[in-house]
Image 1 (cartoon, protein in one colour):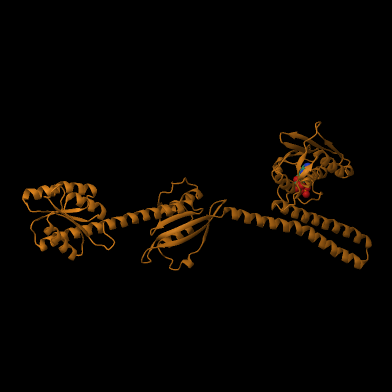
Image 2 (tube, protein in one colour; image 1 turned 90 degrees about the vertical axis):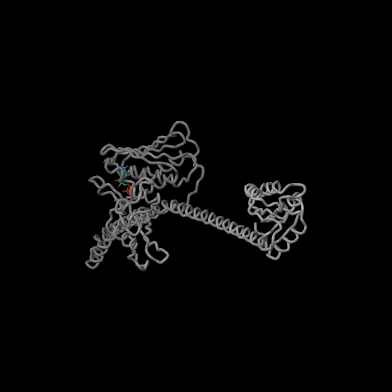
Length: 496
Ligand code: ADP
């Protein structure tokens, strides 16, 4: 409604030149932009182009009558204030004009002052309306901004990967996110407020939350990070901060929960692994150490036979250590995916023949038979890393030879099952008790019994086999019966 300079625009429609010009003069002096028209039709035209705020309108004019002009004005813009000026001022006409929507009424002829008073009042009304509209626009904008801000914050809170709890100064839960509910094992939406102790029973954590909520920590740096265990395998790192008001008063706390269970498991595995490796390396090393001490002693006493025997035992031990370390390195390379995989096409029959040929000498040394049973129909050309396959089959056959008595029988059977090649290494050796079957693929795990006591090994062969089978997208299983023998079966996809 306001023009660029902020002035009020007034249109005077009157056929009496004197009245029109007089009004124009007075109004211009009041700082209004004034336009004049001597006919209703002309007035409506100016109205469309100039968009005045106020119209001074004569009721009796030739052509279109004042009431009709007012009706049309309000059709164009109902906010325009129409002040009626007429020489036939009667109470009835005034009432009628007001009924039709006129803002005010001045009888003709009029003095400058009544005109100024009426126009000023109209002006104030217009300015007031403009101010109200401005405030309303600002209020709507603020509400929209607030709504957007609220929805943005809610989305952020809901999509956080950490659990989040907001408390009031009493330590009562006033807000939670779905991650928190999920972490503590409740349905999303099941956390509906109430004391923090309803959700978490850990006393230390409850006290910390209470302290932060009540504003006991002046310096945030003093707030400790709390680690708590929800169940045997659920660990959390909890951090809290007070929520401060405008006058820095404490309004409650924001508590965030990070699930560190996976990190804890890794940490434990790492510790266990280091302990195992240290153990595996320490016992042969101490034996070697003792043997060398004895050799030194024997040397001083000049007993050459003792030397020879002890030195060869020490050499065996160092050989064992070298294989353990070699296997460990292979395993770590397989597990980190750092193996140099050279995928190429090869014929499975040829590969198995060469592995079996190579290990036949070892089997013969124990008077065992080692047989390869190939299917009648040729197997499809295989695409994979042949070295990985050699290592898998080689390890399984070596185990079969090691854990089978002299004169035993070992058979390697191959056939095709769907898109996979199935290789089964079967022996009629010592077999494995059912309770150990789930453990033999663990690193360093070796079954210790009367039969295996004197056999050396690293306990890393099967974990290596499993790692390689996994890297080829295959699977491995074992069936065994103590005293009867074992069958290790590997399924490997022909194409990967
Ligand atoms: P290693 O042979 O170096 O001890 P492995 O990881 O290859 O280590 O095997 C783990 C354990 O599984 C062996 O110590 C042995 O007790 C058992 N095992 C593996 N293969 C056989 C088999 N064919 N027959 C009986 N026991 C076996």
